[in-house]
Length: 127
Image (cartoon, rainbow, N blue to C red; front, side, top):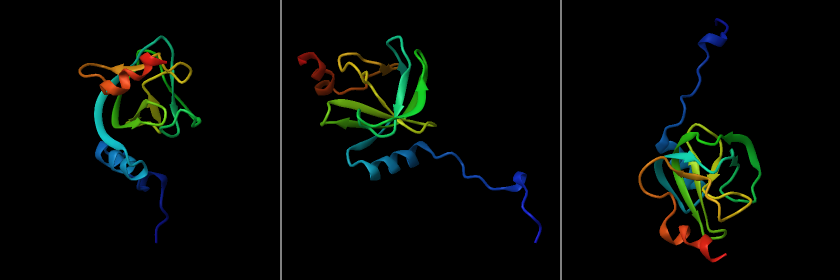
């Protein structure tokens, strides 16, 4: 048999938004498909987290201030009151709120409806 070369080697295609949403739904029971364009706001870069949990370590990947990204999944975390977004093409989760200050929004919709449902958006007002 002829030896395989690097050029002929099969590589899997990038996962589709539907495949990423299905994977997240298997991993996290409250994950819901959420295909939206978002934008980093607030004047600083935002770290991607390894899990949709503010205590999880950062992946080492960042979105820069003003950068836009496409999301595929949203998780509403009743434990910490945050909204987490899975970003298409990157390995990690964004929190719509700053890791250091819950009151500071760091990810906003590029256009259209808010990313946080009303009961989550209002949660920061009482602290």
